[in-house]
Structure formats: C-alpha cells, structure tokens
Length: 619
Image (tube, rainbow, N blue to C red; front, side):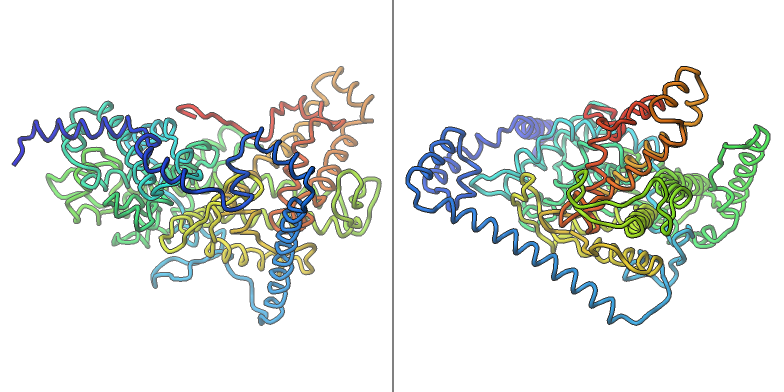
C-alpha cells in the first residue's frame, strides 16, 4: 500500500497536469492523421473550414466555368426552406385537427406532472400547494459561498469553445477531459478557500470519490439560475451544456461518476417529513409568505403587516418544529465538510422538520411570490393598458390597423383583429410567466435526458445543439389550449417551435421567455412615470406640450406604436407563430431609439431593455 504522502503527491501532479492540459496538443497526432486522410464531403463542410481567399477563388471559378454547381446549391437551399415551411403547415393542421377531435372539458391547471404521488398537493396556478413541487429552495450562506467558487470556475472555463466545434478524434474523450478540467478547477478553488477542511478529501481522492460534492455544487448553480434568471447569463450555458454531455453513456463511463442531481425544491424538503403536508395546508403559511405592498399605505399599516407575518412564522415554528436528538448537531445546507464526506450519514436527522427548515420553506415560497410579481406584473399592466385605452369595436384616433409592407409589418390586420392578436399574445405570456418554475424544471429534464441526444448543426444563427423537448412541448400545448379556451377564436398560427432551426432546444426556449419582463418592464415604467415627469418641471412640460401636444397624447402614441409594430409579424413564419410574436417585440425594442418619442423614455430614467449584465465575477 502506498504511503499517504506518495498518494498526495501523485494526485497533485494529476491535478496540475489536468489544469495545464492542452487538448489540441494532446490529440495532435491523431487529429493531424485524420485531417490528412479526410476531406470535406459536402459544400457546407468546406464552407465551415474555408478561408476568405479560398472562398473568393471558389466564387470566381464558379462564375467563370458556369457549370451550374452554384445554381444547384441554391436550389437545395430553397428546397430545404420549402420543406421547413411544409413542416410548419403540417404541424398547424395537426394541431387544429387535434383540437377539433378533442371533447370539450373544463379548464385545468396548465402545467401538471404526468406522474404524481397520491399525497402530493394539487390545485390551481395561484394555489401555492399546486406549485410547491416546482419552487426551488433559497440558497443558504454556505451554498452561496460554493456558488461563488462555481461561478469562478465556469468563468475561466472554455468548455463550449473546445467541444462545440467540428474536429476529428474522439469527441467523448474531449468532453470527459473538459469536464474533469472544470472539476479540477473547482477542487483547487475550494482547497484555496478552505484548506483545513478540503485538503485531505480533494487532494487524496479522485473525482469519482467526491462525486457527491461535485453534484451538489452543480445543483446549486442550476437552482440559483432558476431563482435569478438575470444572473449567470454567461456561465449557465457552459454549465448546462457540460451537464448535457455528462449524461451520455460513453462520457459517463470515462468520468466514472454522475454529475447531475435533482434540483432541491420545497416539495423535496417537506414530502418525507411527518408534518410536512400539514405545514403546506396550514392557513398560517399564506400569512407568513404573502408580499407586503407599500404603495398607498402608511408606515403604521406596513409595520402591522410585517408584524403579522412574523407572528405567523413564529406560530408555524411552534406548531410544526421538531427538536434534534440530544447531542446531535444539524449541519446547514451546503456544509462543505458534510458534502465532502458524501452527505449526511444520519438518516434520522433528515426526517426532522426543524425551525431552520421551516424558515427555509417560508423564505422559498416568499421568493416564489416575489418572482411571480416581477415576471407577471408587467404583462398584466400591459393588458390593463390595452383594455383601458383601446376598444376592439371602436378604432378612434389611435387605431391598431397594420398593413403588410408598411412600417416593416409582415401582417395585414384590421383594428379588431390586431387588438385580439395582441391580447392573445399577452395572455399567453402571462400564463407562461406564471408557470416559469415548472417550465424551467421541464427544460432541464429535457436537456439532461440521457435517452435524448442532440445534433450539432448550423441553424442559420451559428452552430447550435438541436434537441427535441417533449416535456416542454407538452406543457406549452397545455398552456396554449388553456388560453385558446379563454379567448375563443385564435388569430395566427398555433405552432410551438421546439427542436428545429428556429428554437433549437429547450434552453433557447426558456431563455427567450425570460426576456418578457425585460421588454415590458421598462415600457410599463415609462408609461407610469410620464405624468409625474411631465409635472415635475415647467421646462419638461413645455417640451412635451410643444413636441407631442401633451402627455396623454405621447402615452397613447407609445402604446399605439408598441401594440402595432411590437406585434407586426416581423418574426419567422410571418411572425404569427407562438415564438414569432416575441421575435416581433425584440425587433421593436431594437428600433426604439429611432422613434420620435424616445426622449420621453430617457426622461423617465430608461437605460435599456437588456437589464443588468456582467460577464465577470460577482455578476
């Protein structure tokens, strides 16, 4: 048996070699041999590797020889576009036929799991007991410390740059090496952060021996991203693509451990506790988790509501909290020492519903309500603006009619049709925002499904991982059916693009819909603040009166322009499909700086639609 010092030295050398590994050099001989023997099989393959001079020379030769090769390639591209359009039409027809064949039934919760335990709480979207299975747990202080380390490791990683490229050689080996390199960086940062606790487990053991620790760290990053979509905007893609590759059988065999674990939710915390279900059904939980709104309230009223919340939390602790056995020490979530030991070795402690865990449940559900408010409130406000300032039956001075070819519009709608089209789109977005936690969980389940592979291909927007997303697609069709049953006649296409060139995978889908509050939030704030800004200064009042004939006129002009050209069909498939409606809004946002009323946006403090963004540490 080797002495400990020898084992530690060999492990240090292995970690150092892993961190300094140059994968391009490691496979240099194998790749050079393959590159010499292999030549581009198709024009697209050649186009990926050709230099600018080679492409210029090729174009000149095609023009001079006139043998029809360029024409044939253009025909193939057109045929591909026609095939894609035929697929869209087929999907639309199948969806309509399916809805006609379905018997009428009452509206149900838009997102529900296909398999549910007998004692799982059920209910409507607004009922927290129906959503609790999707609510992620708030991070503890120990977990936040590990999150910072994970963010640093992902920041310096070049995983997608090394993996998502065309190259010869074993791709599974390249993936495994890159994943091990990220684990090595994590191990080094953790040891530097807490040398006494992490030195022995991480320096004397291999990656497989610390699989529980790595799974926990990766789960913390995924959970934090679900709770905070604005964060980790540069790192989450690397993380999820790395985990997506790690579930492949050949990659898992080379790693010798599984990197993916279930995201911790409120339901996973309380479902095995004796009083867990009773806690979720207690009316005190609603009092302890409700949001306190300060608008239009005095300080005394706000203090009274805060006191009521504190009293409700104290009552929940008295009624349901359990004490740990004498001499037992309860470790907080994310404790480094416990994670490096492979988790809690005392199962009797896991079954306890302690005061700290009750506080975590209450805080997590409170975060859920705050998340709903941030995401849904801008959509609901825009629906209110549409209904209160416009009428489907009366056009008035600010009509919503659009014509194809005018103002960049790709659709032709009358005032009534456009009003209905906008209202349907906003109602659909409201439902999606209300089910964002559930959709995000299904997104990760689709992406990390070991039985669902992806293919790397050029979708017209660069190389993308094209992968089917059956869970998200099923949930979206449930949401779509619910909205259609509410509004009646549906304007536009009902196609949900998933796993094609428009929306290559579930990650692109969920990223698109996280933009909805970023688009509508600044717009709502501008409309809300304009009257206050108008009355704040005589100079501003004179400017708005001179340029726009009053604040009411400029507010109506902004709403009219958004409701017309934010939904004018300037997306794919004519812009009337489900994801094309959001694409039209993106186009409107990109042109807002050229609008005549843009100075009014600046007067209200507008800085942009993209929100806070940073690629560095602590973003």
